[in-house]
Amino acid sequence: MAVRIDEMDRKILFQLQEDASQSLDEIARKVGSSKTPVWNRIRRMKEQGVIGRQTVILDPEALGLEACFFVLIRTSEHEAEWQQKFLRTLRERPEVLEAHRLAGDIDYILKVRVQNARAYDAFYQALISEVKIYNVTALLSMEEIKSTTLLPL
Image 1 (cartoon, rainbow, N blue to C red):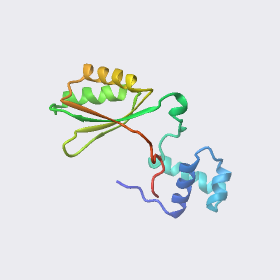
Image 2 (cartoon, rainbow, N blue to C red):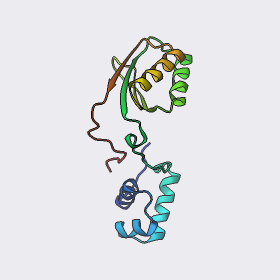
Image 3 (cartoon, one colour):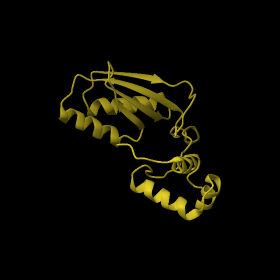
Image 4 (cartoon, rainbow, N blue to C red):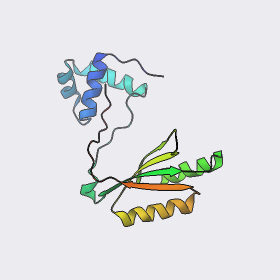
């Protein structure tokens, strides 16, 4: 169920998405409010689950993780036990940045970040040794055109 937020909440959320390291004073100034009401709104939105954990965004290429693969997975297994094992395996693999269950011909899509093709192959070999998968297709991203964590408010 969606939480109701007003225009001031949206302004605060926009500022936090842009740079969560800003001080309360900076955010309050930018949204045209004072520190205490902004703090109260942030606290309320955290309690409501609108605001989750706060983190930093790292540059994968600067850290040597230059290859981004989108991995399309089709499975012939749909039992709960298989799915639990598959999901547990994905959660344990740090290379998997995102995993989505899909409607249509493809069952799952993964976003995998690794150093190179050899590292992807090691990931792939480990994955198929853990879980039975019917078909895997890996697509190498040649260029990242847009990547954002900012939600459209």
